[in-house]
Length: 190
Image 1 (cartoon, helix red, strand yellow):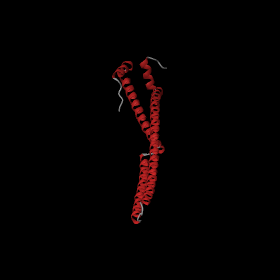
Image 2 (cartoon, rainbow, N blue to C red):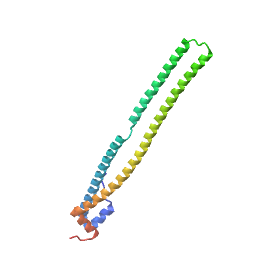
Image 3 (cartoon, rainbow, N blue to C red):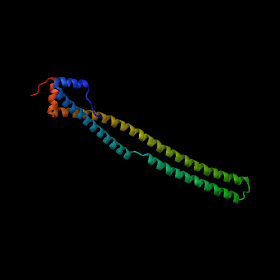
Image 4 (tube, rainbow, N blue to C red):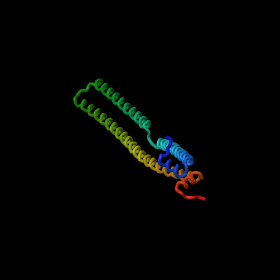
């Protein structure tokens, strides 16, 4: 967005140094501000890209979590499939074997319940490990977000300092600007 000088500043310049020099100084000053603003924008874009690249190298992405979730779902499905197969085989054995007493049936049911309990326990452990990994990733994201906010704050202060340094360098290195500033403040430079 092009910079404009406040009318009060232009009027003050015109009174001190004349219309033509005030116009020249105003053009020079607005061009300087525009150049500084463009440079600051490019530096901010560059820094954001660098930070994004660095963060993508360090963090677990949503894609990684989706892949992990997919693999876990495959394993859970395989376990469920095994349970169904086991249940089918047990049902076949139960129907194939004529159980002579209720006692035999109770033993078989007890073993089946033990196996089902063991599978449920394994599933609970698997779910616990998945929850731990998800919580660890969430903690990493919160930590990185804090570091990113700190970097943006530091970058904001750096940009302000760079702007002031650039402004002073322009004032000191350009004789016309230095003469104009001297006229404004009524100082004679020889």
